Length: 170
Image 1: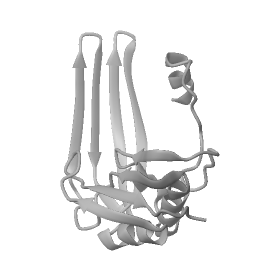
Image 2 (image 1 turned 90 degrees about the vertical axis):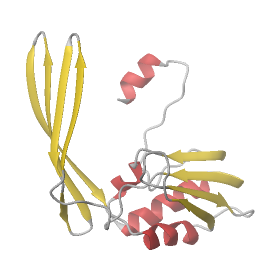
Image 3 (image 1 turned 180 degrees about the vertical axis):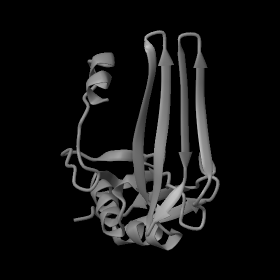
């Protein structure tokens, strides 16, 4: 994906890094972590590390916006998911059944991709951390961020809006 992004936008600087430990050497007025990407950290320890890492990249008074993955009480084991693309030269179907293993959501995403060259099938396993409201709030507060939660958010999953303290996080 990074290679494709660089090809499509050659004048943009892209970085590849680990969410829990990246170092860009600069700070920003705002940082976003959307589309539930935070769930990829999987564990509470790594959630704390990721929020602390991002907080170090915020200017004093800067804002962090995080869209969470569903919380444990929201995760529906056995839910059948389906998504479709129907374009003239492309048909895609993705199916899944939600499962849980401990504090992880687990989905085996079955993809069918049809083009004039044939039909391809592949399976992608998606394991994401299921964090409680208290675990999210604790991660923000331990990174010295003031946090508010919008229960609706962008897609009904909620949205955390955190502001950095005036002194940088060490």
